[in-house]
Image (cartoon, rainbow, N blue to C red):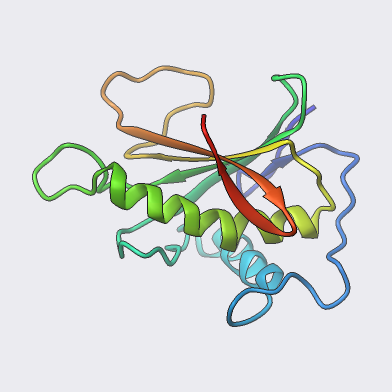
Length: 159
């Protein structure tokens, strides 16, 4: 069962909410704290914060879903990146793929640790506009990447 909360984060109601001792480590600090600040601040500020990505484009977390539909647990991070697409000067798939790799490491890994999850797959999706999960929008540009977790690292999986 997926429950949507105020900041559009959804999770199963039986998920434990404890981070491991010392928190998840990133290259420069505690990942759980970064995720909590980035996700939590959106509920108070009214505007979702920009996430740091290698391309430098504006990327915001739209929602987090835990999906059991494929027969196993999948963690889905859905992001809005308004500058992706075929328009002149837009960010293409190559830039977005690097950003999605990065976002898996800085968002998904700490989220999994914080909520004591064991997803079979992590799916990072970017869209140039909000699109309801499971709906089609032919006007939207969307990019997807799938990952598995091994030793606390995101491993790209052919989707």
